[in-house]
Image (tube, rainbow, N blue to C red; front, top):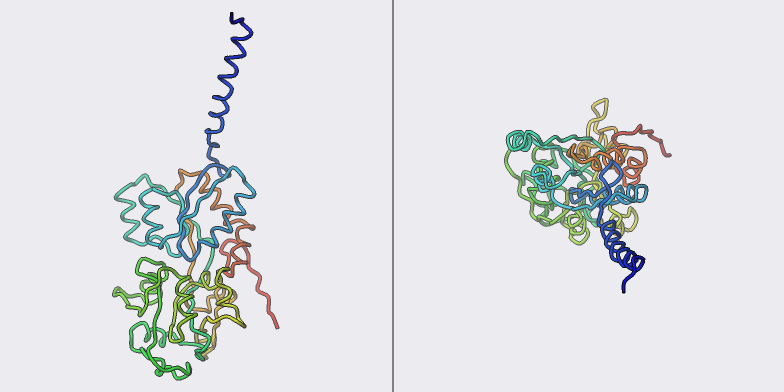
Length: 314
C-alpha cells in the first residue's frame, strides 16, 4: 500500500526533473548585456568584429553574439528585411536602400553610429618597384588607359597589369565607384576575388597584380606572413598628393594619415542596429566605448568616438 509520504516523494521525483529541464530552456531576458544577437559584418571586418564580440562576451557572459560575414550589400539587405538586428558595414545606407526602408516598413527604426575609419589600400607584389601613384594615375588604371606595367616605368615590370578587386556587391567596389570615383558606370577589373583576403593572397602570388583591399584586410592577423614589412610579399603604395603649400607630397598608408585625411581613400565604418534590440544597442555602445575603440586602434584602424593623440616618431 502506498503511504502519503511515499506518494509525495514520487511526485517530487517526477516534478523536479521537469522543472530542471524547463529552467535549462529558459533564455535570459534580453537587455543591453544579455540575450542572443546575430550580426552581419562586411567580409573584411569580420576579424575586427570578432575581437569586439569576444571581449564583450567575456565581460557579459549572458550575451551570445553570432557573427556572419557577407558582402556589404548582403549585410544591408538582411538589415532592411529585418532578418538581423545589427550590421557593421564599410558604407552607409544609400538613397535607394533608404527609400526601400521608407516604403516597405515605416516602423523599421534604425539607429547608426560611425565607429571607425578605414582606407582602401593599393597593393602590389614585393618584386614591383613602384612606390606611389597619383590619383590621376590610379584613375587611368581604373579606366583601362594604363593596362601594362611598362606604362609605369618605376615599377620595373613589363607585361599586363592585372587589377584585382572584390565584386560589385562589395563595399570596396561600391566605395570606389560611387564615393571616390563618383561615376555611374561600372569598371571592369582583370580578376574578381571572393573577398578582400583573397585579393591580398592573389597579389602575394602574382607579380603583375595591383590589388584593392581595405587597410583592415591588409592588417588581418591571418595574413601577417604576407604583409609584414620586412618579409611579406605584399605592400601598399603611397599616394602623391598636394600638401598645404600645393607642392606634391607622398602620403603613405598608415593610421596618422588616415586620421588627418591626408591619405585620399579613407572612409568611415558604420554600425546600424534596430532599436527593438536592447542587446544590439548595448553591443554598439561597447564598440564606441574606450575598450571597444582600443580594439579598433590595435587593429590598425582609426577610432571614431575617442580622442586621438598623434605621436611623432623619429
